[in-house]
Length: 359
Image (cartoon, one colour):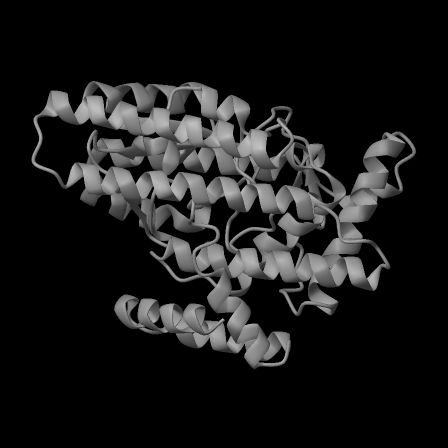
């Protein structure tokens, strides 16, 4: 299973960042150089295979099916700027065939008895809860090294990511496997990151982009006379997230207890079995016995695998409250979001909590 919004941030490095790379060398040593070199190569390879969508639409050699999908992306791209007030630039006006199912793999890690992620800090993005790899083998190697040190790890395939406007992000071939609705929604989501991004606050950034994505998709469907689709799937997703977050909360309480390591491991596995059982009950009682998360639940579970859940949804009610307060005016909504982003982390969290409660 991949996540509902399969996107990531990979801190970009290119020729304009050479002085910064040199500084990182001095600060972080060879490990920093090697990893940033990997990111630079991966990003540059992606940039080199981009082609203008307009040229592909007028090329008789291009598969008509691909052209139809690209037409949809351009319609969504136009709407993003004219209807939602999102940045009007060359992002998603280009196409890149990456010839693999995922563009990057994100590696999440936690200590064996912790629900908190190992953080990784970057010059522009700030600190995030994962490290991205353009190579599956490299990601697996990094995970293996962390496992040797006793960490829980999880490697997630990601179909799209944002460079926050540093580059003209392309439509990726990995994105075209999605439904029309999801493809349109993720274009809105990624452009929202270009509109507003607060370094080091993943929950704020993802919740902001998720609200823009959801409201944007609703307005897109209404403007095109389309029936809203995916409501059933969205409800199931919310129910599943609630199960996972409840499990994380119980694990947090468990790890605060004064137990031996062996007793803690037994209790930890019992909690994962409880999560599986609660999922099966939910699937049978409310989903008609069919569950889209069966494979994810059946596979091995650990702390790291639970980390991504909640980041994309935590403050969505707060942003919905802001949108209602400004009467659905996108420029004012973005201005209010930017004002929140300038607050200290503590003050921002308190403001978001107040907004969420008022919703």
